[in-house]
Length: 308
Image (cartoon, rainbow, N blue to C red):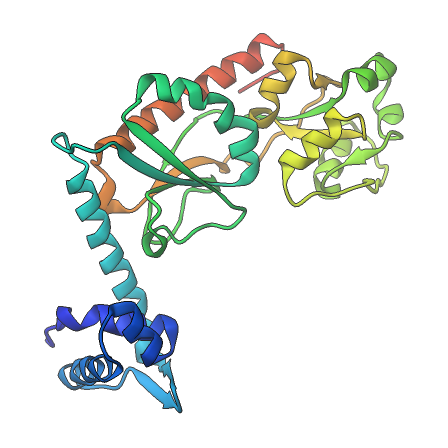
């Protein structure tokens, strides 16, 4: 079995990701010839080529692409392990925990609760990366993520943050709610509708209607959709988690008692590299998130919204 020469892997990763020896050399603070020599030595010891040279560019061949995925994972886990060791009980500096979430989760649920996090853990600062994309935690230096799905993400451990099914709730502004008080589903769907037509069709099916609707606006971010509903632009089907605070303070009002539910396999998960499994900041974050999720569930119940 070929022994992998670990000392050459950073140079390989840099050249593979940047596809340019000079750029890789600048990143590694060495000369281009040193990068070229390290890659050549790596290929010689492995017994096969990793790149195809095209002028100044170096492009991975099939073997290089396969090796890069493993190298990115391994080096990222080593980096994460060093960070975890540095932020142990004896660490002098405050811990920074970098978390990635979708913008709607950050805006509508996480940020309103940050004060409670700071009260409990003033020594752990959250660096929140709000993006609609699933960040590659291992290669982009992110510690943890909150994702909605089935719980299977390659190379990551996933723990459910809630064992309950939070429903989709029909909501609108106070003015719209007053105007629609006592209206039937047939009358409701004549209003301006916001959001995904497929989701609306699920609500219509649950109401026993065969009507086809075309929302007046769709949104890439459900946080923006809820803002539009708060401004009175139309009705929205909102995830209970994102609407709970607005329902409590009256910014949004539940328009109908009819709710629809997600696929039972789809939940919110905390995801992280296996190397951080016992990292104390992550354990504290998980505990706090689970408690806050439970509080949101109880708040929805107190508002008369059925939560399974």
